[in-house]
Image (tube, rainbow, N blue to C red; front, side, top):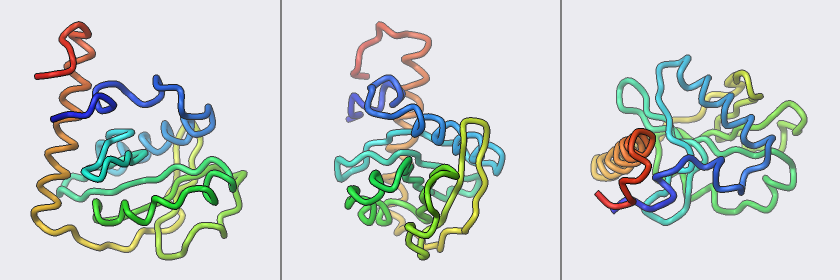
Length: 159
C-alpha cells in the first residue's frame, strides 16, 4: 500500500525550507546528469522518509539526506538507519555549511538550485536481494502514483 506522502511531491507539504528545496532541486539535476532518476521524500519500510532516493541505470539505489544548516545536521539522529535501504548514502548541503561536520564514511554533495557536485564518493554497501526488490517496488510505485496524480488529480489515493 502506498503511503499518502508518496502521492504528492514533498515541497507542497510545507516542511522544507526554501534552502532545502533548492538543494533538493540541485541534487535532482545532478542525478539526471549522471544517469539516475530520483524520487523525493520516499517513505521507507521503517516509516521514515528519505529526502532523495536515486535509482541508477544498473539498479543502484542511493539515498541523499539534505542538510541545510549545522543545526539541521546536529538534531538529526535518524540518518544512520537509511544505510540499510541503499547501496550508497550521501549528504547534500550548500556551500555555507562547513563540510567537516559530515562523517567521512558517507558521500558528500554540495548543491544549489541550479546543480550539484559530488565532492566525496560514498562507499558502496550492496543491498541484499530482498531489500533491493522491496526498495525498487516502493520507488516505482511512488513514482508511478505521482505521475498518475499529475494527469488525474481526482483519482484518489488508492489504486
